[in-house]
Image 1 (cartoon, rainbow, N blue to C red):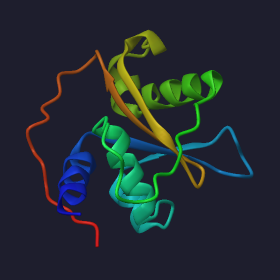
Image 2 (image 1 turned 45 degrees about the vertical axis):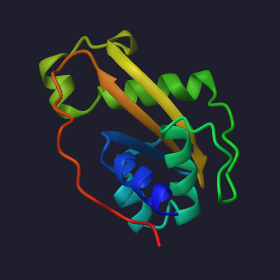
Image 3 (image 1 turned 30 degrees about the vertical axis):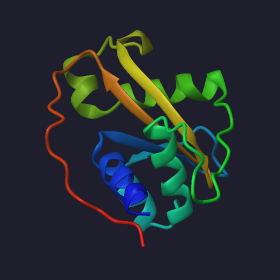
Length: 137
């Protein structure tokens, strides 16, 4: 269990985005951290354990009930990428940014309407050194 908690700590502090689609408006994407999605009730502890499992590319049999990862529709993936690029600090500096400017797009599953993805663009330099600690009970 402590190993799962350590895995979770590394997962939460990765620059990860959770895009939440509204059930009523499928075109609406809201970007938030895993922490915010959990605090708002979009993600459960069980969801976070599965996300950590997929994030760390575990090969060992999980010690919890793993939530299966369904494939992400390509059109939804494209919409998430474009939504990400529409953030003001990117759009203002790089108004012609396209989905091709996404350097890394990792999908970790959809949980209660949240598509959990890790995105890095090639437009800015990012520093991934900082990691706060979180635990799952």
